Amino acid sequence: MIFPVASVFSKPLYFYGIFLWVIGLVGYLSNPEKAATALISGGVFGSISILLGVFSGRAPRLFFKLAAAVVAFLLFVFSWRTFVSWQAVLNGQAEKMVAAVLISSMLVASVLTLLLLVSKKKQLGA
Image 1 (cartoon, rainbow, N blue to C red):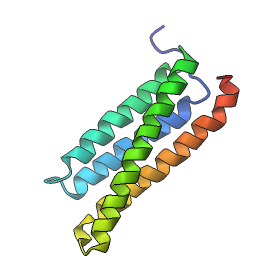
Image 2 (cartoon, one colour; image 1 turned 135 degrees about the vertical axis):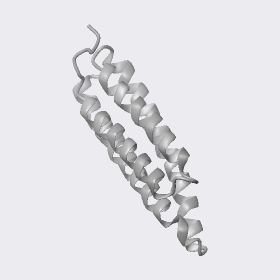
Image 3 (cartoon, one colour; image 1 turned 180 degrees about the vertical axis):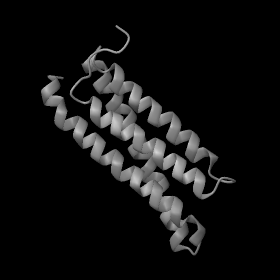
Image 4 (spheres, rainbow, N blue to C red; image 1 turned 90 degrees about the vertical axis):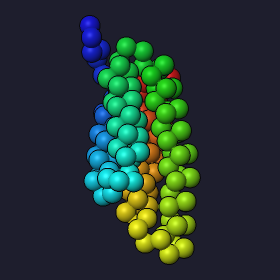
């Protein structure tokens, strides 16, 4: 079987991954000359999140731990980048506003996804 049955936390990972893709694309389109990393990081980590959701049915406990680790890592990265971005905006760099809003939305999505994963851990029996 190529695609195993989904686990209880597949959908949050699908939505999170798609959200990262969309925000990465929006970030890139807002400033193509300077925001290629937004497209790459959104695409890479969005894809990783979706793949974790797809394969979570094969070994739910393992993939739960991997997914929680990836989302926690991204939460840390987006927290740091949100702080730096808003600091730049507050210091008069108005051109950083779009990036600050997009990164902040990724931070909020990371918090919500991690909370959903943890809430579904009981259903998993992990």
